[in-house]
Image (cartoon, rainbow, N blue to C red; front, side, top):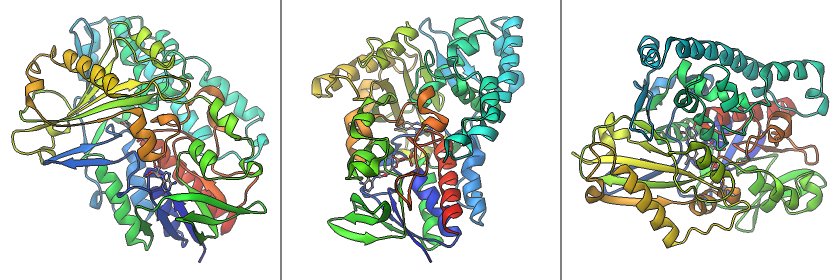
Length: 494
Ligand SMILES: Cc1cc2nc3c(=O)[nH]c(=O)nc-3n(C[C@H](O)[C@H](O)[C@H](O)COP(=O)(O)OP(=O)(O)OC[C@H]3O[C@@H](n4cnc5c(N)ncnc54)[C@H](O)[C@@H]3O)c2cc1C
């Protein structure tokens, strides 16, 4: 039985572990933190339970498939429910748009703009669905080992049909004219840390995924997915070592031989790294010749996704709201430009998540959980320092804005628990290069074939999985990355 050492118990490390353990490999996961999950982490304090990172469940089939393929029923591990409405979008002029997963209901909202806009929206859905199917079947589900697997007529033909060079906002603008709708249908590129004004439009599939497949909620919060994966992995005979930091991937003559934990060599037939790819390249692979094209200079020059400033509030009062809410800045374009120019936006957009609207177990009686996320720049190429002044300024500014939401005027006097995460927290807790919460930015030249792959030509028996690898960030997408890497390992070793 071949032994695989997996570095990191993030979503994709656990998912790959389940797939490989089911196929007869012996997997052991070494995780630096005291609990599994990686960015899919949890804070449990004073009776409040917070999801730390991901909150929006898209593409539920990807979650379910992992359990089904390992021979069990997914509903015995995670209970999912469709959210209605999926989210509420608040504009600076106080208008609110509820995005419903119920088509007739959403159409009646759209008709309040105009029938022409409604027709444009439906045409947009058809266009983007076609692109989603193409992307999924031709690009997302495969691994690129040789240039010829990308540089060929079929790929370029499909790429042309995908119109990947447009940005999300442009792509939507050819279907709907109303600026409010354009924003509502393009801001979701921020879910993967990329600007809707410059990201390749393949990311317009994200709102489409929301609109056609719904936004779901996992009972107990997103962290239940991490716990469920941990449980399944252990049931299959896998082993997890917590609080164990890997300091090196040991490579001899171009072959991975194992990992080093506390100066001790752990011999392995296969090493699979779930640590963020640019961080792992810089820190775990010691010799230049084993890094291939990813020299330290190249890693520093690459583009990174945005990061997040998050306030986790435990409130001593119930508030009436929806589970997910987006609040747009007055000047959304300027907000996004500043975000990617490395400065804290003067007037940021922000996102609220309140799972206790539908899941009372996450807070004491009569209390509420509120997660407030402000997209901020990563620590790449910026002089930003997250000292106490910077943290308190942003806290004050955003709380000042929340207090203007009807019903939330008294929020400040009801905060009985709070914790704040900055890009520096994300960098240090999960070893994310430059604290970029979504890893390498999925710009055109860092997507598909150009993104780091599951395998490396220079080193045999070494594999990679996670957000900074192909196909990219987001829970369902890293679950795809886990499927790809498991297939690659089986291709080489079975
Ligand atoms: C704030 C935030 C909000 C998000 N919102 C959403 C959302 O709503 N929906 C969605 O689908 N996605 C969302 N995402 C993205 C999603 O969380 C990630 O894409 C996904 O969880 C990444 O999983 P991963 O396996 O690639 O990496 P990680 O979760 O980063 O796992 C890597 C693991 O490796 C460990 N590790 C690193 N170095 C070492 C070492 N040297 N030794 C041992 N262990 C090590 C880390 O501690 C970590 O546990 C969000 C992310 C963040 C941060």
